[in-house]
Length: 331
Ligand code: DGY
Image 1: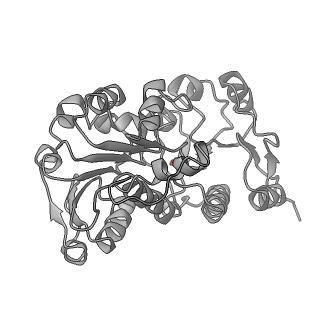
Image 2 (image 1 turned 180 degrees about the horizontal axis):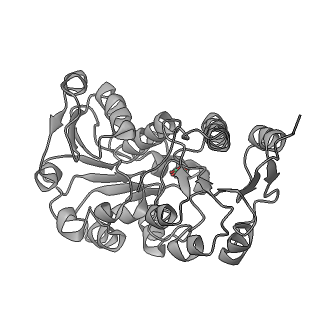
């Protein structure tokens, strides 16, 4: 009997203990115990001997890196739903299969999107700061103090009605918002009926009519600055913009400008154009109560991360066994 050699799997970040234990059992796994982000040079070095690379959204796996990979590297199985950090075309040219971890972050991301939708008009972050930042200064209830805006009966415009967009729509409907969406194609009539959703072929027209814009599409060359300065100018002064997808889908400088000019009501952002750097002007706007900022944590649940790990393992095992990995991402 011959024992099959375990594949060498290089994992770029610290993963939940349960995932790492399973990885160690199944593979010749090189873990990142102290979670120090790997440099491009370290990644290139690993790509000379690893059979499988497991990057995350914090690793830029661009064409230059992929071209330097050794011939043994045949699989990049990203510990992420989004794959905008990987040059899929370059990987395909090099004969490297790419996989991701879809479906397991949907509900968690939609929950956080809804949390931002609630937090903005009801001034949740501002209210919480009154008690923690200036203890003792709260003078008690007053009929005219800390008034926000009612959520019930407002309109939400969802940009990207995939799994996450649909999950956001379900939550928003339960809170009494009417659902509007823009997507490359219409969702099924059954889903439209369930959500009582209005489809807008024209993103511009939808933006001009909604109270909340929720960005839920993937970051691709086609969606780069999809919410541009021109489109932001179409919003009503009472509108809020929420982004839990990727920072570069919105022109961040234009968003900051329009917020500073008071031409929209506010923004809730979990993602930024130059993560982990956050534009200081956004931080100032947060102190002024105009934006709520989160550090890319919409999908951050223990359950979600373990399920992401399970998906990574399933994809590696399928590939090693000569099957098509279930979550293959095509160029
Ligand atoms: C993903 O996986 O795409 C998320 O944004 C990271 O949490």
